[in-house]
Amino acid sequence: MHGVNCDDLEDYRPGLKAAEELGIKAPMVEAGLFKVDIRELAEFFGLAVAHKPAMSCLATRIPYGEPITEEKLSMIEAAENALYDLGFLQFRVRHHDSVARIEFSQDDLKRLFDLNQMAPVVKAVRGAGYLHVAADLEGYGQGRMNRVLNEGA
Image (tube, rainbow, N blue to C red; front, side):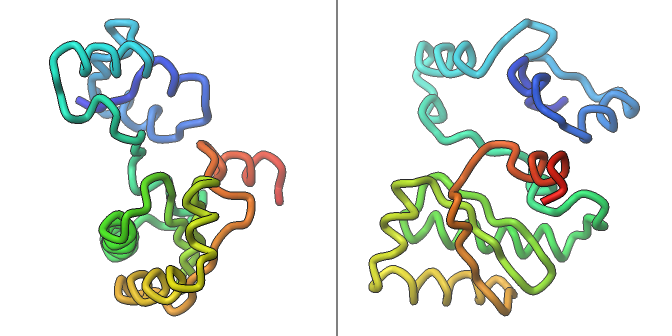
């Protein structure tokens, strides 16, 4: 099973086809649940994840057409865990070989530009194995890799 929901069906998700081909079930889609429904249910049942930011598969951090390897996924996971430990809440680490291009929410992006925040971010992300750390000035946006694919930019 995987956690795809009805909102996810409106976006380009190559993993959905793979999951379908492998017979992986999508119980939230089968139940007709959208993200708002899932949050309401989690709140109703008192689950700690009710207000947790959405988190997509780590493979979505790798550009289309690039091989997905355990090493790349481990680097992304380590970098994102380190950023969470620094108190950042909504972001994605996009993997571009030795470069981590980080999309921060607007609030986190403002916080990043405090000079006292930059050095710990760079150190944390380099600790995950990246040589270069870049902040995407457009900030975080769901499906940004899809937009790059569709616009060719």
